Image (cartoon, chains in turn purple, yellow):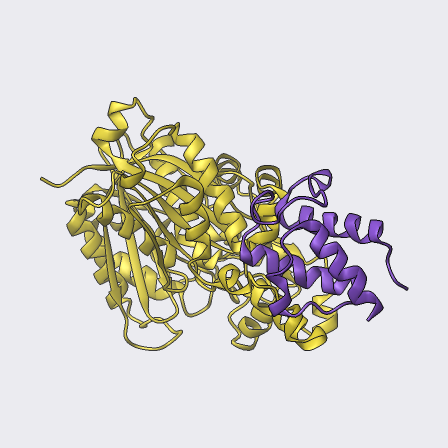
Length: 83
Length: 413
């Protein structure tokens, strides 16, 4: 069953929190993973792998560079669920 | 002029204590660290050994953040916790980071990370293998974790020589200071390899004690009925610095580290050279560098792992190196309490050796019911023994698979 946008956001925030220790509230839709949340490329890939597992989607490496903000990632995952 | 190098801080995570002080207290009291495993490995995999000496992780769980724990293999977790304790114990605050080095050691490396990743690969495929897998499992990962935490720009090195590793890393630290590369070095080693694979492999080799009905008496160096070592895990960290540096900041000095020696049996991948010829050579080289003679040495923390074949060659080596003075040397085999920490053993035992000099007390060897008649040493048995006053020296011996022999010499201050 597909996750709602709100569920994806909170699930993603939990994954980011697990990986980086950042508070889940800090993972706001407008934040940039690199510029605002200070997430490096290896952490980003770890987050992507965990998100794929959690939401049952595939996020090809070539698409990861387009996920600049948290909202970008949420949109991508919501859409990928329907695919 | 050769620098005088001293030990000003210690930290440890061992099966008998979550800190260096707790480890010393337990070694002193003769408290064993081996326990029956609280998991299903023996049953599930048919491992013939059902116990080990697992690390007391209380200090690790208190001092590491959740993210640090997640991003570090257990061998690095123990390393970082012990290094932080040693740093705090030394009272170090501001240092010249360009003159700060790390000299660390591991025998096996990140076995948990590697094998967990292998399980993930088999079960879920390549995509689920985490990007940090290699930087977590590499043998230099513990050193790198410490180096990054303390900003050690002088050098961050890892010595790998099985169970001699962390004696070599202490020797290497001494050379880094004497060679002018560093003023302060965080030296030591860590191992966290109590895993069904290692237990199975060491069992296959018949290296482990099978005293499953009595884990606490299984590690019994020098006993005639010893039947193998007890698999352990843990870490030890020592802060080494020049005496000038230590005195300038008013640091407490545990002992001087005066020299070290190294040799190789070049004989067999696992078995010691039976006469102890090259173990003796390492001891003599260490004493020569330290400028001490056999008559100065009053204490040895022996490698003595409790294997049938290992303890006798070391006894022969000690007798040869100490000559007529051997009866004046109090020998402690503290693996009887701690078990064998592999790559962490040398550092943990070096700490006990330095503390023995500081406290003028040699910790006991426990579990000797019937002394092996082939062993001729003045063993500290069951109760601690006083060391003499005055200027004395002590040795800590470590030997490892691959024929590695390494010895460090401490002097009282």
